[in-house]
Image (cartoon, rainbow, N blue to C red):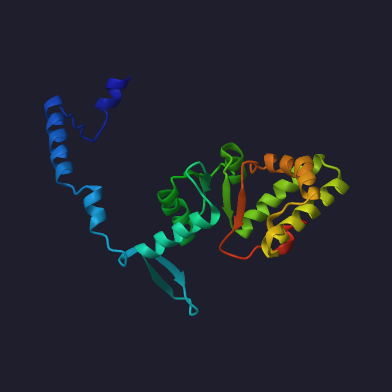
Length: 233
């Protein structure tokens, strides 16, 4: 069956012998030796040189490009790592389109600065929530549209929780979030007993069902997060 199929092929079949293969290997090795090393290439990069280009539409509907320099991008990545306290043990799920500057900084340059792990989510077939549930990121960045989809998962996850208890736990979580955002002084980061009880009895369970139980922090990006969505009301 196989021989007849080969005979019937109209295209020519190129056969590479062992000696030819060795010659190709030697040639590839010579070319690789002539290629500059990473250290050599890095030494030629100047801070003010272009690192990446970002394209967007202006007020007249025309596409314009913005040039971001190496020091701009690396300073931003370092500032994010310092502000969020990210370290090599952290895990991040990468799913945003890479034409966004934010996704490049988060998924390329932030790992270079901190050594954290990035799980690249497929853009087809597999829902993002399933990827998050499987890999359990320790920090999660999402757009308001993505948080809206997660809120639907929260609604499903809260099905087993008494409605009154859920509303009480949500209120405690909202109050804690607002205090972290706006409070000042020594008590700004103090968590109330009510919030700790709500977290232990209700919130941790819901976070586990949507894959965010390992998250120490969740952030909204690219657009403001609606307050009602923040409360998951």
